[in-house]
Length: 157
Image (cartoon, rainbow, N blue to C red; front, top):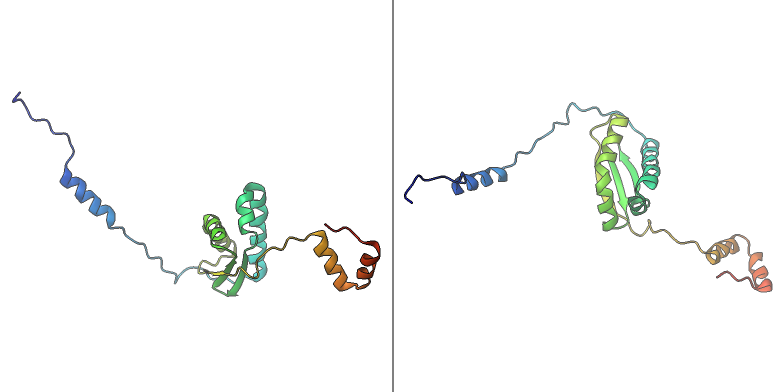
């Protein structure tokens, strides 16, 4: 039994040293001094956004329904503000945002665009239009419809 010692090839000290090296991650700093900064318009932004929404509607309806109420606004030459209704919708947007903004930056040839997010749940709620609500809006436009409703007793349920 006192034969030759066979090493398993596993060393605890080398394993610990390897873990320490993994913790030390290098961060790459990209200089934005030499990146192109061509002009883009609000129309360019809205056009690309609508194209993305149409593609998502066919390809991934779940993500489309989550982000269709988002609004993208050009603040200045280097900044775009994204208004979103809820945090859960923003999580779905984050899945596709990198690809969308990279595509947009290449399309307009402006790689210094910054993106800021703002929660704007009050203005972005979608109101479900029932027949009764539609009729009430028509009454605001034409008050004679109210008299017609009183006379005919329309069932708008």
